[in-house]
Length: 210
Image (cartoon, rainbow, N blue to C red; front, side, top):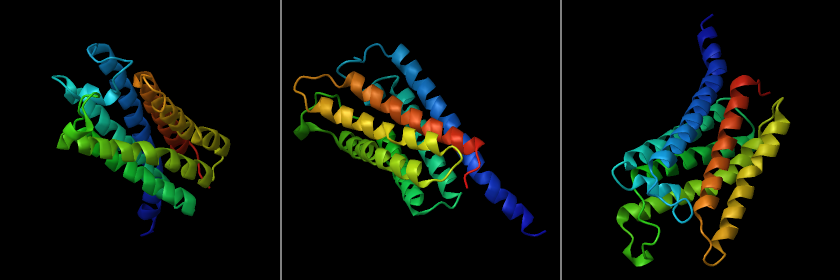
């Protein structure tokens, strides 16, 4: 009898954490969409979503960053709470680092996209470090979680696991092309990352992972 509450908590924690992750991820996408509507001063072609944090309404983007961080952090908890095998555990740890990097990217506002490297502010430098960490670690985390977490929805986890890596490679390829605008590719990258996170969170909140 004394172990019943603990056992119940162990069963419900992964589901609740996954539910929080899904809700936070959906809220992030919804808020980011709203920001695109109200911030017409930011170019969709030449400026990244991080630049929405600059200006009087910049706090909206800061909130969006924090929602995204919660979604990744809660997903890490949802995965770890299921006591998975090593690959998925490693993926969950990377997700926690992605969440931490996203918090840093949200708290510290970026510099304008055309700022010379030798004129970057401390805030802009820290933003780049945090956001860059999240950008690079998420595809690896997705692969480790997608292929390392056994589930009755294994096919969904696996085919979605490759999407973040594909989006990142596309984004890096675009950056290598001279005079190519990065606004839309970066937005596609952000969307793919969010879609992956929401899909996996929904799977873990509904399904029994064995």
